[in-house]
Image (cartoon, rainbow, N blue to C red; front, side):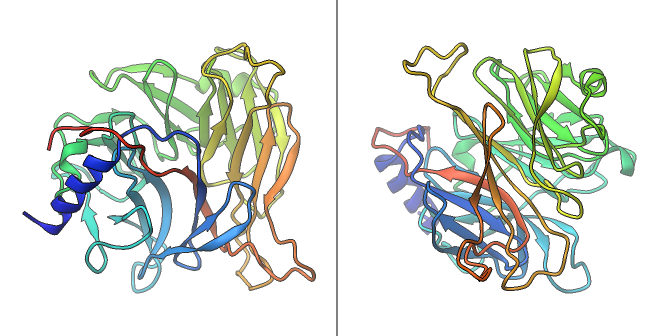
Amino acid sequence: MSKRLLIAVFAALLGSASLHAADNILVASSRSNSLEEFDTNGKWIRTFATTGPYAPIALAQMPKTGEIFVTTMWASGPSIGQLTNKILRYQPNGDFYVDWDTFTVECDNCPTTATQSLLFDSSGNLWVATAYGKDLGAPIYIFKYLAKDLTLPNPPVQPSPIMAPMFRGNQMAFNTSGNLCIAGFIDEDVQCFNTSTGAQTADYYAEIHASSVSPVIQPAGLAFDGANRLYLTSVFGGQLAKEVNPGGPIVLLATLTASPNELNGNLVFRGPCPSYPCLVTPPVTSYLYTSAFSIAPPTFSSPDPVYKVSSSGAVTDFIYETAPPALGNDHLWGASWMIFTSPPSISLLPFPL
């Protein structure tokens, strides 16, 4: 039995799929080739892991084992700045299993397998989207990897990927119906798909373009609340928008940053209620989190922030340089994806080995 499988069996015996209260936060710091760890008050804890020759882009945590999966960009060499088809895998504590533990996204018929967005469903299956689509004459391919196969050095992809007719795929998220939705800033659109049939179930283009938000929303990050209302970041406008009700209209919630900074990471929704209206008494505020990426050359004194935005639009500099005079103590240069992490809870085997 391989070392990876032994670790997976042990993790499966001790941990299960539910990620309950968040323990810490991980943020991809793409210009320092690292994953940085913070507590839930935004205080830096440590460099969780380094990413070697790769710049980290998107993060996701496997709910069965607590492992961290990371999509990447080349940080050096002739392909510097280009997205890769390599996904890094880390143990919950940030360690590699053996050296640089990666697996490669493969597709015989795809014009590219360069990836950006990935996420897990509640069963621990991994979904990975190619970054480019119609600009290369093909759709974006969204691949599924079964939870039980992720212990393998090169997990096989499931047949019949979802095909999204879009130019550029950014963040993916599940809505309350379990449909998989993907944002595309070039398309100025969000499209949703049935995960079983691959059929398109929603297209937000008309709703986005009917919004009064100016400039037109170019969505990179997206999230849904318990009422299935959509929230979006606008990558170049530096804005956060929300649906008033499912189906619209979409209105401005907050302006977070200005050019040349960009909101090109993900968007995380944290709320107290599984549905709306919230029946908690007294009402508890929901929050959204997203990061800003500065395109200026990074310096020690110019780290990037993570913002916390209340459901009413109040903006907090959640992870931000605070020690005078701008000592750069938030440890983020080229901030990208951020996730709340939590160790697996104790239970029986979460999936068949």
